[in-house]
Length: 107
Image: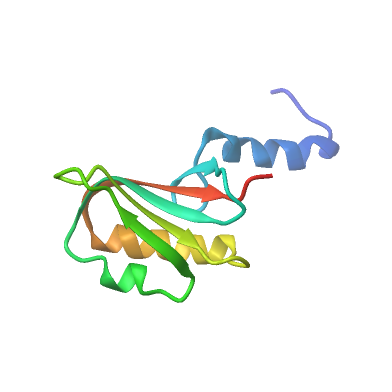
């Protein structure tokens, strides 16, 4: 068994987070804007009312192709990762099939 010095422990614990997903099991990307966002590819949902009516949502957009291929929420400035997770969970509860991705603010 290979042993690592304790100094490497934080790095070892962070490595699983580098795989593109994080808390909640949603994919994660670095966004292109200064705000958090939540998007759904190939959304098949019963209702999105509760999700896009959340006070953390600045804008909500659904693609115009039929059936829609994307749905996205941009969060208000000052929103946090916790807000993004709450909205992703809301979308997950409303979905019938899709892929949810959370985008963090651009660095």
